[in-house]
Image (cartoon, rainbow, N blue to C red; front, side, top):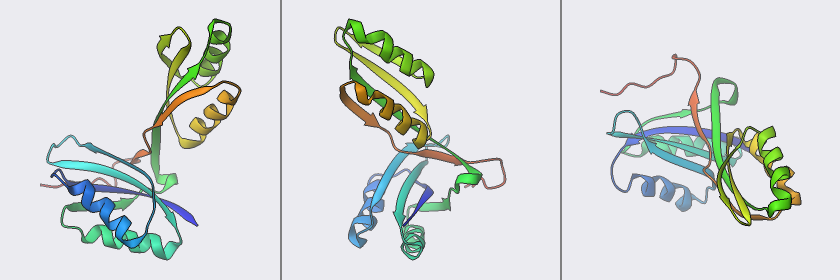
Length: 166
């Protein structure tokens, strides 16, 4: 099993995300992560999809995505040629005696405390998947009340592989 990160540039139209995810579900492919957001040009949306499987299946996914009408461009974001980031928000139970130790763990990872309540702290952290996984593993000694992850967003490095659409 291999993992690939696909970056799609699609027309910003209603139902485009549904058509893309429908392609995966109809063929029995799994999406590990999907993020979408409008680009600097509001006519287009950038979608980052992480999928895993055998190389033949991943190549088939790329070909099938490229056939969709709204897909203007598709690229594989290779790890050595790209930058990936993910956002995580974690709500941790932290009574007064535990706060300093939770804050210390957050400081090690350069995380931000974004909400403080009488019995909990909410922490925001951005980074690659390994960094976020390491952060979560250090919080195992505390009760995680809620956790939200955005999924991977990524861009290729440099200016060689930018798609311009008129």
